[in-house]
Image 1 (tube, rainbow, N blue to C red):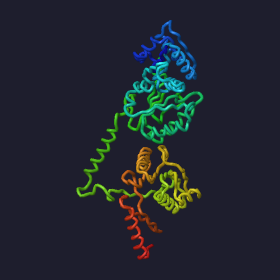
Image 2: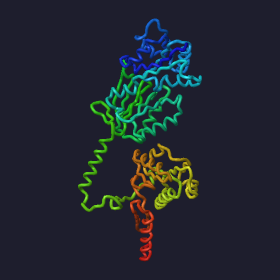
Image 3: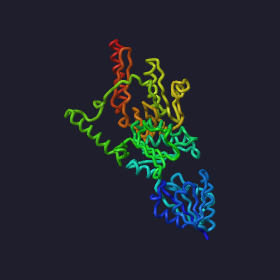
Image 4: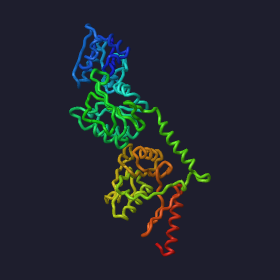
Length: 433
């Protein structure tokens, strides 16, 4: 006769956070298996007739295998996990092993009882830190390659998620959290709220509310969870609040817009080239520049940058991201004038960029590039949808005495070129060119 395997979530530590379902399954078990430290946490709930098996940290697979085997022998087994069994805990290895055995769902029967996770407990302690979209990332690279972890951090930061870092730091893993903070600072203000909680809900609990700038990495260990707010999170009376939406930002923008409406003359146009505010970049060659798209449009963007830099004899830092490139772009890459990464654009590619050109042939990709550029604070030019970006590239005429730029606000680049060429012709006829 098949037994039953209960994957029991015991919460963050304090037994008052143990659900009624978890208590019921613990009482019904003949055998209780778990990491010995967690076993001691629930010891007051166990009885003398129950068999208790505690084992050291690092033997998760063996515990899962033993629990499955005992349940298949017809016994009622409770395999315990701290927090929630489905979050970085024992549910995953159990089901992986069952899958490998060709499990059909009945030998043994498996029941998962959800619990209060450390993330929830910390968020509760500090107020309303996860009031909007959030995610959890483990900084342990024992089972996950660090490049994958780093990519997830960058994407989560770019997406403006509240982020909970599990397994942030240990005696052996001392640099990962510092690297995560370095990535976050590319996307978040240094004033972003951060909570560091150690041994949450236990007798020696320590909770600190700080900021990304003031975070003391040395004070964090494996018993800690680090919770980082999003761009809208704020601190009030020692608590962290993440609004349920971006309403505050929208209201601020609306107020600015209303003020602009009041200042506008009655007959002033609401769009078009009159609404542009032209500027000339004087130090763009010192900035990190990313061009996404290796076709003719991308080539024109790069050519304009190289021509501008050539006037001063400077080599700009240009990254070209595109699976293919024109012959001219390939030649520039071979000459070392640009750095070509022969692959499609991916989220996180704009980290550290200050000037971005979205010039791929795919509308959705250009839109995503524009969104990431806004998130990292980079100025962006969007070739196929100028209104999504921050600036347009005009048709330029360079003379020894002047730089003349002609723009239609991105609406009709060919006409801008025509106007520029007419100006060149007029200057030439006047002997001024």
